[in-house]
Length: 144
Image (cartoon, rainbow, N blue to C red; front, side, top):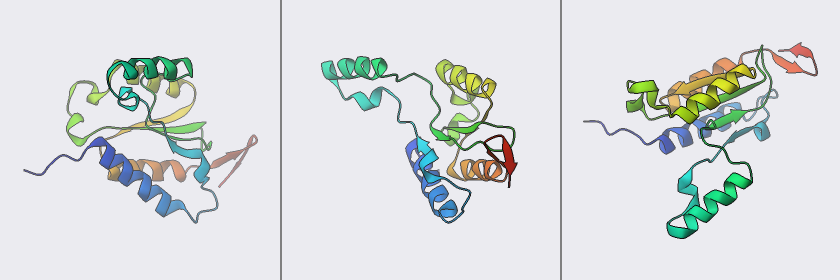
């Protein structure tokens, strides 16, 4: 049986591939491509965990925010959001998305985002490539 890669491994591979593949493209802005590290795992353990979670929430942390964002408008979209999931989640209820994630992704779509849920680094790389092929929007103008 082939082991299922972790979401972390898939996401790290995807980010590495994007940074490598697009680093020399003039129309890629690496500063606008980033991960949103979101979740209780960031907060540590024990009493400290609950204090840090409360602190992060006061600072604006929200549950369900997509894993990867690229803030360059392209095509009809204002920005790109990719939510990463393990391969084995694809066939589960709601594709492995939590209610908070479904709510965030729906709100992002309504706000004009290109939103995709990806179940492997390869799938995410392909989806990001689709986004990168869309026409760039600059100050109300469209360019390629």
